[in-house]
Length: 286
Image (cartoon, rainbow, N blue to C red):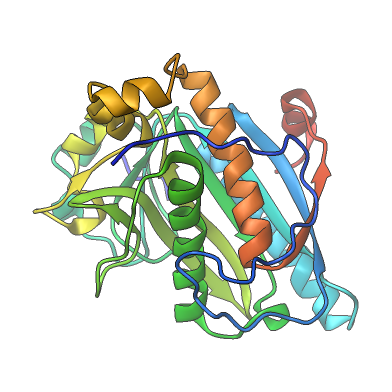
């Protein structure tokens, strides 16, 4: 039921510090960037499986807090949450049930209809989900700019860390390698505060995507970083470049560190890690 090329790995720093914008970075968006680097608190749960409903409630709570700060004319720092989800399907505000290849009363996983944009998608283990809860007043009050900038983060991750050439497809949202969509994006903006975000398939089991029409696109495929690397593994050059092949846990860690680094650069933010453990998370009233 509805509940509401040759590849090589680059070394990613193990700490999250401010990274200065490169002079000529690849895929430059030329975004409007504040002259002063702003702080962004980061809740790192990238190794944990968090139920979707808990994370959704947590986001809305943070958005409410940020709106209160703005009303009081107080500083409103940005927030980033990174995690994985238990298997779940989510739908956007106007999503059609025609894109579900199952009876919603007998869904294989929970299905949530949310206030984000876009059609149905799947979240599950091996997929890194980033929820930026940021004040666009500190960046650029332009939703299209924000979506393209989230795409830019992923494009840089794939290029700089995995030597995978990814791109955008005109008229569609997300990040693609050929006909395969590796990253889905669906956001909500309320009084210029963003929530929801992006999901990058790293080691994800893609089978559950076959039980829906992902993002309402019938003639497109879904891919993952692991799947692409495995496709290229048989080539001589690739085999020489990467020995041994990283396991799932390593791929998740490599991807996470790269996402944080590129997010920091593209949005010109200084990342401050906020420690939170799963037991602490459960005790919070999210």
